[in-house]
Amino acid sequence: MKLPRRRFLQLAASTSALTALCRFAKAENYPSRPVLLLVGYAPGGVNDIVARLTGQMLAERLGQQFIIENRPGAGSNLATEAVVRANPDGYTLLEASTSNAWNATIYQNLKFNFTRDIAPVASTVKTYNAMIVNPSFPAKSVPEFIAYAKANPGKINMGSAGPGSSPHLYGELFKVMTGIDMLTVHYRGDGPAVPELIAGRIQVMFGSGVTWIEQIKAGTVRALAVTNATRTQLLPDLPPVAEFVPGYEGVGWQGIGAPRNTPPEIIEKLNSAINAGLADPKFKGRFNDLGAEIFGGSPADFGKFIVDYTEKWAPVIRAAGVKAE
Image 1 (cartoon, rainbow, N blue to C red):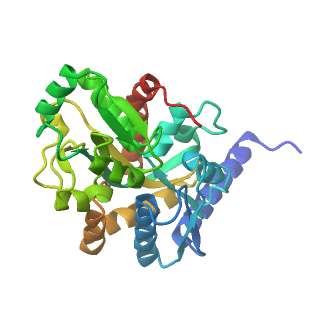
Image 2: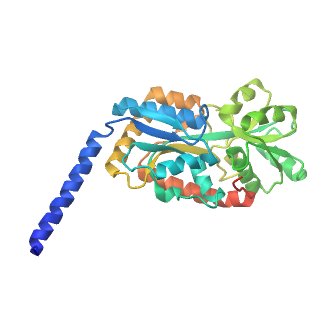
Image 3: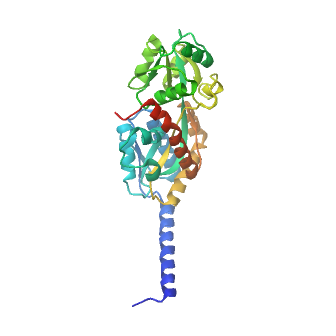
């Protein structure tokens, strides 16, 4: 039987309203069971710690357990792909980070497009590194370092925590913006580079502030500046590199992502809970102790930040010749 046009439109409108009502009801009841938050790195690192603090914030505000699961591998791509393929119902989330933006350029054959397939939920923190030299190095400031490097091209060894790591790319950006030539020496993380810098086998490193804070305080290494655009709480006496190299900024970030097509009502609920947690002095202090700065905002703000960040670093990665190993 052929339905009259008016009756058809009424039924279509009713169906749309019922669908919207069901989605609203799901969001109202969300989460009704534990939520899985995937981390693309091993336990104990900054990414893992931030994820666990975020999970705790969400659990306290939404009344449901947020289970942290570490799935390291392929520069966080394994965890990301698992979330991309998950049901978009808000019960599988990703601890998104700097690597996700960099991997878009570093990896040539990813099975997903991060900015297309992961919906931004909320940004949480930004992290920064410090420009550190061996105490016997003649330069005691960033301008002195640049002058020395230009007078001695190719004679300074710059430590890296591995190809595509933040110490590597922040150092490469510094090289590009100052026009200096340094030899990059890769290590498997910040930790193995610590004794090398102290011994003088490498002369400079743009290392994680959290990793190097004790050596800086003890005077076994000398910090010249931070890679953040402004002075920081953890190292308040250090100027930013940008004071001497205008426009320079090397910051990492973390936040929460969800599978594409996750209902916007659920994303908004998570975003509100995260931003409320970031404003809580208890969590704010714990993030600051990690050398992390609070970085809240809307899902749209986070999405735009990721796109801009990806575009900014793509030419730096290509110029450095960074490729997946």
